[in-house]
Length: 88
Image (tube, rainbow, N blue to C red; front, top):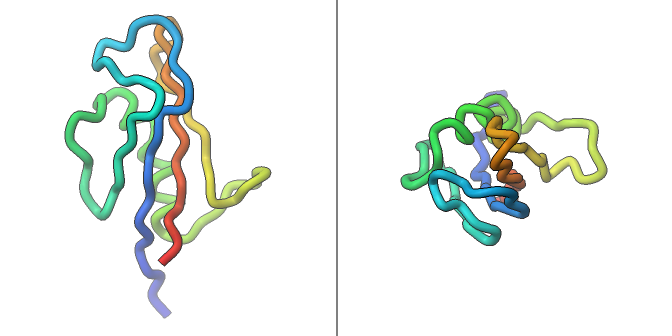
């Protein structure tokens, strides 16, 4: 049986320093099989594996298996994102 691709959302939940893309707490994107506009490519590159796992039904061992937290690689201006699997 083929796995069904899920929709996921990405939300900024914390921000330190000055993000070059002006991402701020509360910004949110929904991924439905393609990259959202206006999301920093560096941050998105750090989320590719977690997004893929969430979209294809995988789970991380965490407090909430429907949510993964990812921090942008720019540690000096760190933006923290939450990736949520959206239930159909």
